Amino acid sequence: MTTSPTLDLPDGVEVDAPLRPGYEEILSRRALELVAALHRELEPRRQERLAARAEVVARVSAGEDLGFLPETEAVRSDPSWRVADPAPGLEDRRVEMTGPTDRKMTINAMNSGARVWLADQEDANTPLWENVVEGQINLRDAILGTISFTSPEGKEYALATTDQAQLPTIVMRPRGWHLDEKHITVDGQRVAGGLVDVALFLCASAQPQLDAGKGPYLYLPKMEHHLEARLWNDAFVLAQDALGIPQGTIRATCLIETFPAAFQMEEILYELRDHSAGLNAGRWDYLFSVIKTYRTRGADYVLPDRNAVTMTAPMMRAYTELLVSTCHRRGAHAIGGMAAFIPSKDEEVNAAAYDKVTSDKQREADDGFDGSWVAHPGMVPTCLEVFDGVLGDRPNQLDRQRDDVQVDAADLLDVASTPGEVTEQGLRANIEVAIQYLAVWLTGRGAVGINNLMEDAATAEISRSQVWQWLHQGVTLADTGEQVTRELVQRLTEEVLPGLPGDEADYAEATELFLQVAVAEDFADFLTVPAYETMP
Image (cartoon, rainbow, N blue to C red; front, side, top):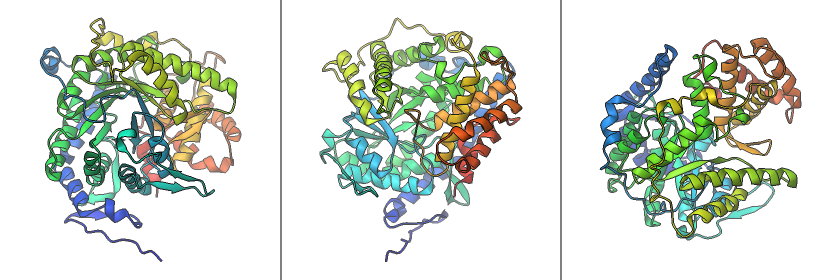
């Protein structure tokens, strides 16, 4: 018989959640002291930055446009500064595998042959309490080489090697600034989920990573302003002092996956320059942010069907070209977007998908990206082959300056030139994918295979936000001539539900949540915020 462990809680810290054997090793007094120190130092500024996000949307709604900040012109025009040199284990990032941190996925990712594993505690995960803690256990065990797993069917999983030099470098993605951790409070206040993730990761895995010749590395999501990057940088300085490790040991790659951040790439790199590992082009969340930021601004900012928006659209080309040129000018890695395809048993489907993925990765490699993401181990060889063909024996393309790139604010704002139409088929697809994803998310899984694609929270966010925008802009569907109304969304939802896999009753809570945000009068900033409150 096993008993629940007890925790050695610092003053002012409460943990109100079930505890399983082993949790006390992650929720150590040292880790909880770091959580408390970070919270007490940074929480007022976190709240200020979250309030500032709403002010940006309000100004855009009033007719003001996003643009490059005049107050930071000196940072952009100063040619002298560069970010820190690539850290050990991050010199070569030509293929990065992404995925949640459950035990089976951790082993598969470490055996994938990728150079980096984005160990996702954010969009491919759910903040279910067990995932928050056990994900950290799995990362620690993977670094120590002690991880193994036996499935309910009896299949055994283990690392192909325990030599960390031969395994992907782990880069953990914590939650964004907007998400709380409701199970941990400091002085009676909820703590930022991202600070919990980082503190637990650093206390459990920083030293094992350093012992393995690498380091504690992070992917930072959903920032909207360079002062949010400064907030992270201050967290790193505090944490490194608390843990007694040298300043600059922590390295962070920032996802440029919000519309406001696209205008502040240099400033974000600058704020984190001693801790920076580059920028990533997070395409799906970026589209979600375009819609969210400009949702009330009329037809010129209405995007067509989600699947019609490709990376060759003018605004997306401007975004990725600017990212590469900015990164390489400052000595930072530029990492490309996700190939979400999951290999299928249908060879015809596979052939078409592999061709599409190869073309996408070839564009990125030719543009100067230093690496790119895949969502399934089966896609690693395809991405690797493309980048091998461009890089050869070089670890990256940091020496390739993109002085030919000239991108201004109008290029980034050129949503109107995006080819495609809004159709009933696209509306149905958004409803179907969002409900199907949410139903699984609410059970505690954040990475869901739907229609041969590995979907995460970003998919649900763009799907429901498109429905909201089309509804509130009174868009007329190109294929049926109908106007998008609440009644139409409700009718199509009722038509979609019987065709989803499993029992229709399994989708009741997900459907209610989807409709709550998709047809509401006011736009919910993040779908995952109300969804998290419904979780046990």
